[in-house]
Amino acid sequence: MISMNIICQVDTNNIIRNIISINRSNNNNKRFDIYINQPLESFINLDDSSTSGIISIEGTTANYYKFHNPLHNGYTVFITNSIYNLNIYESSLDEVSEGVNVFDKKGYLLFSNKKAQEIEHSNRKITIGKHIQDIYQLDSEETQRFHCIKSKTPLYDYCDYYKTQYSDDYIVTLNSTVPIFVNNDMEAAVCVINSKENIEFTSKKLRKLEACKQSKSITINSQSINLYYTFSDIVGSNQAFTEAINLAKFVAERECSVLLHGETGTGKELFAQSIHSSSMRKNKHFVALNCAAIPETLAESILFGTEKGSFTGSMTKEGLLHEANGGTLFLDEINSMDITIQAKLLRVLQEKKFRKVGGLKDLDCDVRIISSTNEDPIEAMKKGKIRSDLYYRINTVKIDIPPLRERIDDIETLCEYFLSKYSCRGNRICYDIDPTVIEHFKKYSWPGNTRELLHAIEFAVTIAKENTITIDEMPAHIKNFEQQFSSVTDVNIKQLKDTNAPPPLDVSAHYQQTLEDIMAYYEKQTLVNVLAQHGGNVTKSAEALGIQRQSMQYRMKKYDL
Image 1 (tube, rainbow, N blue to C red):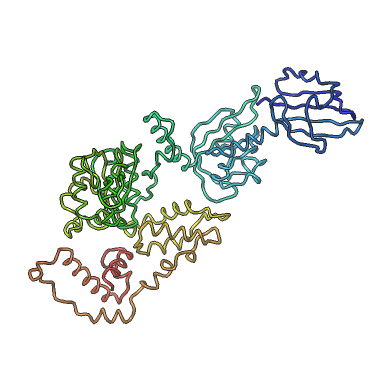
Image 2 (image 1 turned 60 degrees about the vertical axis):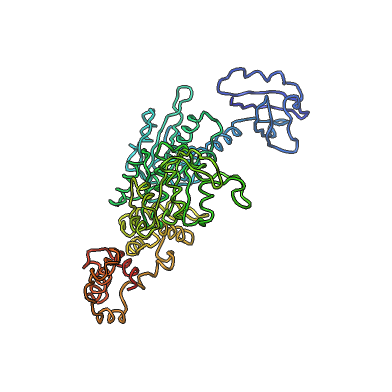
């Protein structure tokens, strides 16, 4: 947009006596002289009742301001599109997904968009007009941004690790700072700020662009190509957990079937979606079926689809196998799937074909199967919950996801991650969690695993009144669990001490029992004896057995001790 600044002097009869046009180029500044000595309405139409407003002049929208002349009769009209344009520019920058800060040549902040405020925990009503050193906690002037301003040279994609004067939280960003020149003079510098979330979102947009390129279609959008979880969304550094992640990454690009084994709430679908997102099928659909939530009478039709007339009231419908064609089908809790349907699923894996319910012809099916089970798959197979032939088909690679009680070292990291996710609620922001809460969490057994921790943090943030989460904001069952398990009651201690250990189990006399039953027998008796020896003290008993306190509590719950 061309800058327009016009001063128009008008007499009492609304006749234009002089027009002065000012712009940077100084080109054609006399083009409005033809209106001198002409009525004002021949040039512009103003609202006589208002001293300011918005008009259109030469196809450009501009602001006008009327001033009475103090030295002679008549008035002056000042016309400018600079303010109008500035509002457009600022509103546009507020919609940009990256943070944008603009500094003048001396280092004073001229503008900060909404995203920059969000990333830096700042408020532009306070920071605009302040110097860099008054905004950020700096030890010297030799910062990346200030260096760019002083040297008048751009700096691209540098890592910045800093605090502002308004928060004690460290901020980690990837920035680029570029000097702005006007008529060969440096007048300002613009800093573009990218947070980790910005970069992750950009990577998702890149995947969508690649999908558009491959399909040669301009209709692909967030509805037609879903953006699923990726491995960057999986948080944790525990050794066993990291090994599970690395194995999942390794098999993601291969076409083998994967079986995920983990308790409820450990993140099996998160793993499944991440494998899909890193596979060659990432631009196709990821379809999930919770086998435990679908009635047996409906599971077959939902999975394979139906033909009209196959049963009373049936219509021709496509099933999940059709929807997932070319992509990934995730069968959650496959140990809950009906055995007869498992037999049909086996044919899909072996022959890459299936037949609809009531259908007469085979349909081709190119689907990668990822399955999950919340119980040991070998035991599920022995109990008849999983067909043995299907088990060996879906178990090309088995990934064991450890429960949260076995990765206590990840508790603090997960809390910080979930806290940042749920911290914004209305006008309230929670930046911190009391260390005593972390210690309390590390003693809890987390039967609901990571999902339970997520909900605990969400609950705490929802009811928090201060910027620091304390134990008072925790759900009652987590807050008070130590009262239930800190020690065994006196009555229980006496019962434990008076308990005569049963004679060793005669395996030959119980040859029909499974190995799991026999091991459980001895595990329970060991717990009883150790607790009796330590007066019911859970912590000391756990130490004596070489396990963590929460593992001890889990086993006490398991055997109702």
